[in-house]
Amino acid sequence: MEPATNAASVSVSKNLLWIITRTLSKDIQHAPGFTGFNILTRDSLSSTENEIGYLPTINSPATQLNTVFEIMHRSEAIRTELNLQHIVIVMDQALYAKAMQIAWANKEIFQRIVIRMGAFHTICNSLCILGLRFKDAGLVDLVLETNLVAEGSTTKVFDGKNYKRAVRVHKIIYESLMRIMWFEFQKWVSTDQAEMLKSCVAEILLFSDDINQIKFEELLDSDNFIHVQELWIRFTDYLREENGPLSSYWMTYIDFVEKILLALIRAAREGDWMLHLSALRTLIPWTFAYDSQLRLFFTSVLCSNDTVTN
Image 1: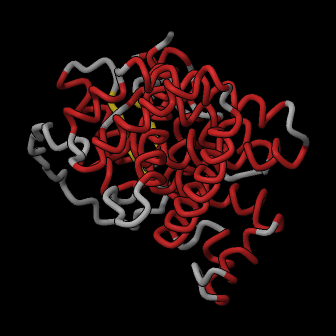
Image 2: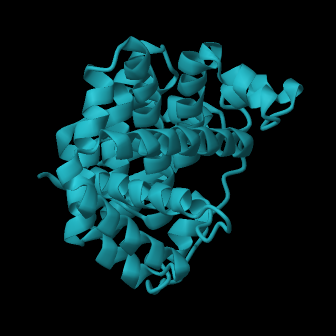
C-alpha cells in the first residue's frame, strides 16, 4: 500500500473509533468532539517550536503581478543559496492564481518552485463543493430545523464563506449519519460475528473512561477492532452499491467529509503530508465535476508526480 493510501486508511480508522466511542457514551458523554478527541489521543507527542523569520518588506501592493514575480524571484535566490532541490511557496487563493500565471510563463526560471494554495482556502473550496451537491437535498432544511445555523447564515455556510460554522455543521451532520449507520451495522452483522463485536464494544467502553494516546493506538491495533473495521468496510460497500440510489447518494457525503474535509483538517494539524496528498487526490474529480476554482490549483505542477514525490 502506498504511503498516501495508507495515511488515508489510518485516518478513516481513527474517525470510526471516534464515532463508536461517542455513540457508546449514552448517559454521560465522555468523548469530546472531533478536535478535542484528536488532541486527547495525541497527548504523548512532543512538539518542536518553529523558528519564524521575515523576509525584507516589498513596498508594493501584494496582488500586483510584479510583486508576486519579485516574491518568486527572491524565493528562487534563497533556494539556490541554500542548495535546495525545491522550495515551497504557500499563497492564498488570489495570489496563487497570479503566481501560477508567472510560473507557466517562466517555466525554466521557476521550475524548482512548488507553489501551493494554503489548506484554509483549499478547505473553503471543498465546503463550497459540499454545498453545491447537498444543500438542495435537504441539508438547508435540516440545519434550520435543528437550529444549527440561523436562517440568514445558511448561504455563507454552504458557499464555504463562513469557515468555522460550515466545518461545525458538516462535523455534526457527519457524526449523526455515522451514528445511524453504526446502529444499522450492528443489525447487519451476522450472528457468528456478534460475540466479537460485543468484545470490541467492551474494549471501547473501557477506553472511553480514560482517553489517551497509548490506549488509542493499542485499540486501533487490536484484533477485535481490526476485524470490526473489515466488517464495517463491507457494510459501507453494501450501502454504496446494493442498498439503492438514495443510500449511494448519501454515502458520497460520508466519503467526502471523511476522506477530504476531515482529512485536510487532520493533515494540517498533524503535519501529515501523505494524508494531505491523499485528500487532494480524492478532491480532484469533484473540483472538475462542480466547476470549482480549485481546478487551477489541480492543473498546476503540484499534481505532477516529480514535484509531489520530492
